[in-house]
Length: 82
Image (cartoon, rainbow, N blue to C red):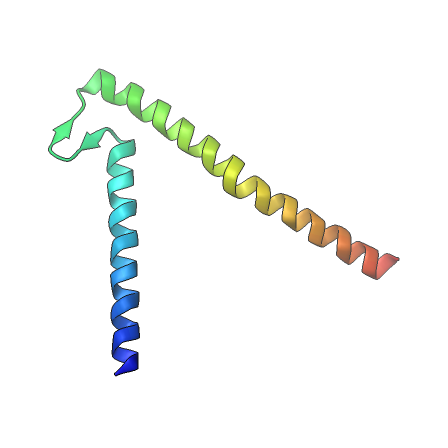
């Protein structure tokens, strides 16, 4: 019984994450439910939103991971080479 509940919870979480990713992608491409931006505005919206998304993703996710990994490498060099 516990395994069934655990599987159901995992299913619900994965379903919600996929729905959030789907709607975020639609938002970044200028689609808001039944409303869609017109072509010249849509292109400007896409360029601005994707640029902002890439900037935020790189500064908030990628750079901290690279900084952490640099610390791991420095520590390994200290341990191995003294």
